[in-house]
Image: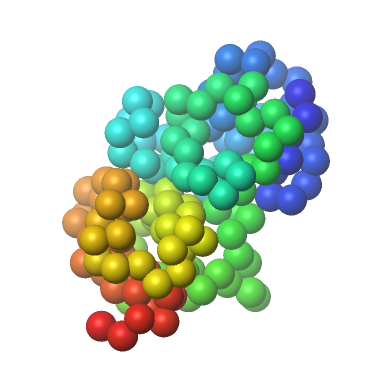
Amino acid sequence: MQLSINGRWVEADVEPAMPLLWVLRDVLALTGTKYGCGVAACGACTVRVDGQPVRSCVTPVSAVAGRKVVTIEGLGSASSPHPLQAAWIAEQVPQCGYCQSGMLMAAAALLERKPKPTDADIDEAMTNLCRCGTYQRVRAAIRRAAGIKA
């Protein structure tokens, strides 16, 4: 199956029903996307498909064939971080860090859709769960990346 992952076309010899999460992690060795709950409730596995946040643990790989998939590995780099990644660091968002890749992908989709989100927009878009409870820091980082003063 031909897949567009982080701007590159790759071939994956997998069953069409295999969850995208396992294709990313086990077949393509892109381990930044995390397994959390397996039922699309926590958001640790969030990636972007054609710009939209998608829970990859319940998305069959066949559903993304020919579509643009972006994982945390494609969001930015150490030398050129995405504004959200820089804001995440500045606001000291991560504690354990497990949920952060999914949080960042959901936040990136939000800012693409609404470059200057309100707190209500942020609350509506950020349905990812964080066991450490860094929600206020997540909101502050999103506002910082959007250029919104606190």
